[in-house]
Length: 192
Image (cartoon, rainbow, N blue to C red):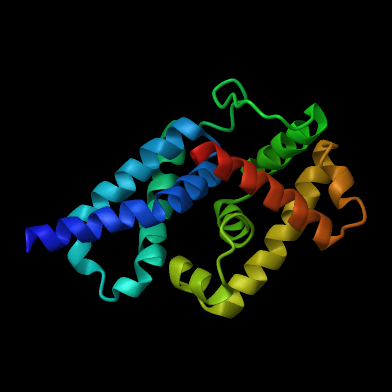
C-alpha cells in the first residue's frame, strides 16, 4: 500500500509542480514564498491523500490546498513582489521586462479572488469548469469573477501609469491576454 501511495504522490509532484509553483508565485508575488507554499502544499497533500475521492481531480484538489496555503503565508509575511528578490535574467528587451513587472505589480494590488482567477485562466490555461472545481464555486461565478478581475487589473494598470498600460490602452481584452500570457510564459521558463 505504501508503495502505491508513494507512486501516486511522486506522480503528483512530477505532473503538477510547475503549475503549482507558477500559481503560487502569481498569488504571492514572491518566488521564495512560492517555493515554501508549494512545499507546504505537497506536505499537506501527502498527509491528507485519503481525502481525495476522485484522482482525476488531483490538480484542482492540489490547487485548493495551495490556495489556502498561499493566503495563509501571504497574511503571515505581508510580502509583495520584490524585484531584487526575484532577479531573473531575461533576453527580452528592457521594455518587455518592465511591462511584465508592471503586470505582476498590478496583480499584487488585486484581491486574492481576482488574482486566483486571472492566474488560473491566463497563466495556467485552465478551463472554466476546472476552475470552478478548484475554487469550489459555480462556473457562472468563475465567469463573473473573471470579468471583474479583468476590469480590476485594467484599473490597476491605468492607476499606476504602468508601461503595460499601452497593452491595455484601448481596453482590449486581446492585448491583456497577450501581455498576461507572455508574463506567464516567462515565469514558466524560469521553472525549467
